[in-house]
Image 1 (cartoon, rainbow, N blue to C red):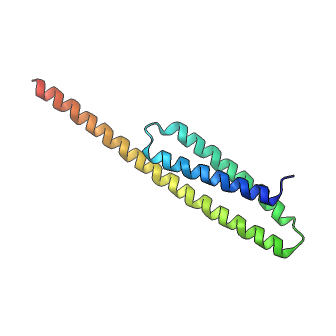
Image 2 (cartoon, rainbow, N blue to C red):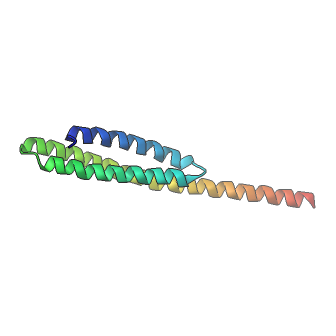
Image 3 (cartoon, helix red, strand yellow):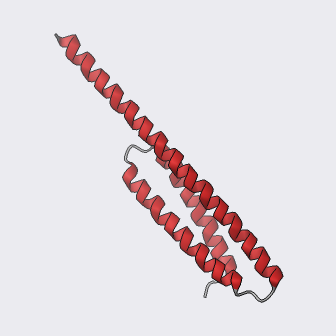
Length: 116
C-alpha cells in the first residue's frame, strides 16, 4: 500500500501536469485531445485524493491525521482552482476559434466582393 507521502507527491505532480494542460487549452486549436487529457488527469487526482484520505483516516495519531487532512484540503482547493481554470481556458479557446472563423469569413467575403 502506498504511503501518504507517495500519494501527496503524486498529487503534486498530477496538479502540475493539469496546470500545464490548462495553459495549453486556452491557445489550442484542437481542444478535443487536450480536454481528454485534462479529464484523465482530473480523474486520477480525484482517485488519489480518495486513496490518500483512506490512509489519513487510518492514522492512530490525531496529530498526524490532522496534518494529512490539512494537506488533502489544500490539494482539494488546488483541484477546484484548476477546474475553474479549465472552464476559463475553454471559454478563451472558444472565443479565439470564433474570432478566427469570423476573420476567415470576412477575408473570404472580401475576396468575393473584390473579384466582382
